[in-house]
Length: 180
View (cartoon, rainbow, N blue to C red):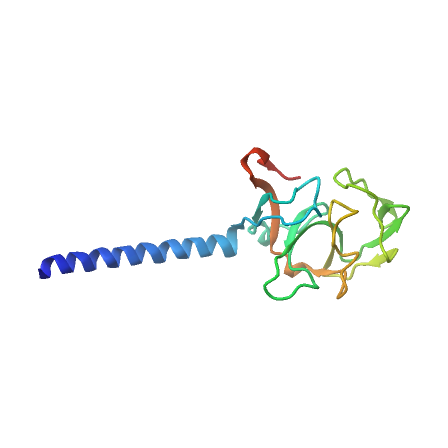
């Protein structure tokens, strides 16, 4: 009887070790490598549709700076703890001046070419000066996006708050594609 008991304890210990190792791997991936959030709104249409699940990689933030046009994930300045992070396109970085005229976006005096944008771009404020160390984001669906143009706290997100970069659509499988 004792012998069976010790085999059972050994199996239990092995199971617990495997469980702890698996949990550590999952935690490492979640915190340092990638997450797979579900996009709940139409703010990034037509690039990302509601209900699609994206691959957000977290590694390159340690090796490269963010660039114009990147689709990034970050906490909204207006959000409360526990709110879902936002996914939007980077439009301006620290030192840039954005202006909105006749439904168009101008960065540092130059009209942006935005083939990904849907609808005209309007804003309650016509001009934004992005402080150093901060970013300005907008959704691709310009007529239906709760983005920097409409946040109450501040229109700017600290660069260090960026959680990762959306690189692909992974779900549903028939929507599988790389994001640009």
